[in-house]
Length: 137
Image (cartoon, rainbow, N blue to C red; front, side, top):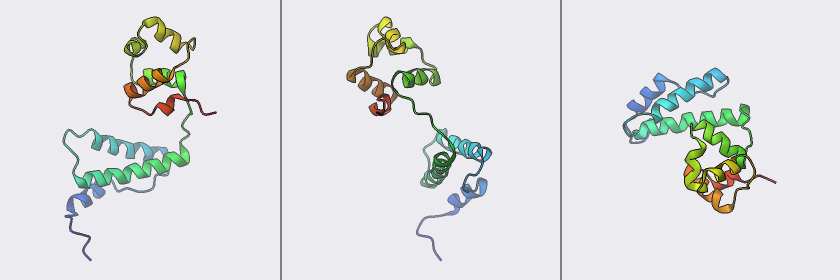
């Protein structure tokens, strides 16, 4: 049986190096994530075979996370503080958005609420959906 018109040798080699299987433990999750990271960090553009393989691994990670990983629901200023910490940014990096250091401080300490304009600027700055900064009611 012929599997389409692609040359499958390179694709099969990827499977030989790290055969994708459903993830059933944290150790398997970490191992799969390392393979994903190595593909994403490649200095050259991914081949179509590598992209397909990455998509499969990504699906396996997604399924595992949906089943076993509880992602905390954080919004607004709490999300903003977490992003600053995770990305090794300081409050001063937000001055272009909030105009002054005292405004940044007031926002981060909850003294001033985020405005729609602030949320839009933050979403663009962090490249995430503005909805991430809104609390679910």
